[in-house]
Length: 427
Image (cartoon, rainbow, N blue to C red):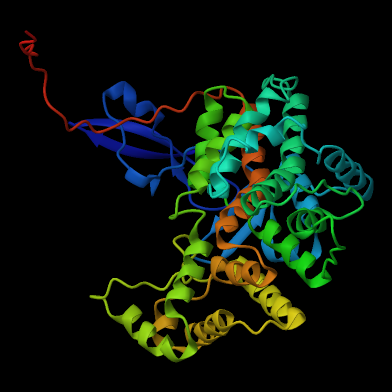
């Protein structure tokens, strides 16, 4: 891997640094030896720093490529279901029919949560943000399921992983039910993963709940398209927490906390808030003009992407799914009319095309979730539910690699030089 070398000259001295090549993507310069020479690299935001070696997900933002274990995301989203993708991410290969059946059975076996978890919810106010509840409850799982916390044992790690994937829909739905004052709904193992989640969200004891096939399909695709996205902020948080030896439930809770930030997991919620600000189709031209005005603070949310400079490969599938859901449900919502008109402008207006401000996955997922009837404060919860498999797969991969070290970034210190402290008079 390190046949090529980079030569760095520091104070007249030459330092050889290995250049490592992966299967795909940019080469990386191994700078680990710099510390011996009294120097460290400086890269706020880790814009040009590789923090780990991984075989799970590959992204080429310039070409609009997203691969999970080598498979294109659009193929996985249209030809596999979410639990197939979960197996793929966790085990490194697509499941056979028998492996898939066994995996689904294991997931179904663990969908129930301990009865004591219900009492945890009573400690929250009813108007608490669902992400606050999710973060706390997931972190508390280690107090209920403490028999598989030996992180050096691969079998225990896999059991923890499947337990988390199984229980997150149940806990997420409980967060919603608690916030609206309804009884919790138990999972049903005869339903698919997405159907089960929808049933726990929307069914009530007083009447039957019919799950629309288009809605279940859309929900499954939302889960799949958010399953993993390489070394983003929350995944890196999970890896960093895991590098200390923390239990998996604590690590996933850390990932949830990171995802909660509006710059990360709150993008589709921000998109809906923007659509509400615009309000109606006849105000779109006004807001598009504001978006084009560099002196105006208004920004269109849900357009373009920091990573994808060409197009977001997830957005095409999500767009098709979005239109399928809207057609199937026949919803007449002014906000959705605003969204569809904005989409048309973004795909046809030269300003948006030239700046590559295409509708992204957050734009379409927000519209779908609203059409389904999921409140905006649950959007990030669903993102966390979906991303749990990615987080736990990276955690498992990291602990499977030999010589893993605790994460310890360096800094550029700009504080005071050494000085004497003068005690104040205290009489």
